[in-house]
Image (cartoon, rainbow, N blue to C red; front, side, top):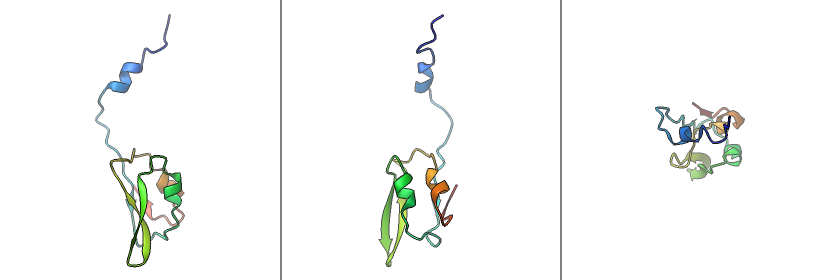
Amino acid sequence: MEIKNKALFLLKQKTNLEFIYPKIDKKMCSGCSSCLRICLKKALYMQEKFGKKYPVLNKKKCDGCCHCISICPNKAMSY
């Protein structure tokens, strides 16, 4: 029995799953940019305000993997 390509139709189906976007606590962030380096989709970028740098999330690029949360040394990112 040939099973190759049998599940490809599943990739086109809609789901009711929602993305989990990381929340950024600007007060806890040290501006180390570790989260930028781990983000494969380049959904995070640094912004400077009042002399302090912190990451900002572009939700249109984010795929919700939340690797940035696990890499943050200051625990400035959460679910």
